[in-house]
Length: 172
Image (cartoon, rainbow, N blue to C red; front, top):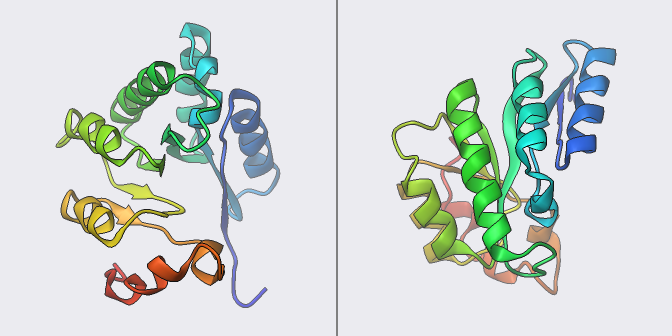
C-alpha cells in the first residue's frame, strides 16, 4: 500500500494492548504496538491494570505508552479517574523510557497541567488526533509535543478550523 511497510497498532485498553502486542509478535518488524488505557476506560487503571501495562511496556515490540490522556467530551469515565489514570500511565512511561501516545479532547488545561508535572522526565510525545484550537496546538508544540492530525482534517463538519492552521504545524 503506497510504500507503507510498518504500522503501529494502538492499545487503548488492557485487553486491546495485549491484542496489539500479539499482533506485533505475529508480524515482527512490520507491526509494532502501544500499551495504554484510553480515558474512556480509565477505571481499568487499577493496581492490576498498571502491573499489566508495566509488563507490556517491557516488551520490545511495544514502542510507546498509551493511548492515554483525558477526554472530557463524552466523560465515559469520571474525570478524577481519568486524571489518576493519566498520571499513572505517564509515570509508567517515564519508568519504561518509551515515548507517549497521547489523547486529549475538551480537556486542554488539565491535560497540559498534568503533563507539566512530568516535564523533563518524559520521552517524546505525540498528541494524536488533535482536534483543538490553533492556540492549543501551538501550546502543545511549544511544550515540545508532536501533533497528529487524522481524518478530521477532511471532515467538512468538523475540520475547517484544523485546515486553517494545519500547514503551520512543523513537519518534524
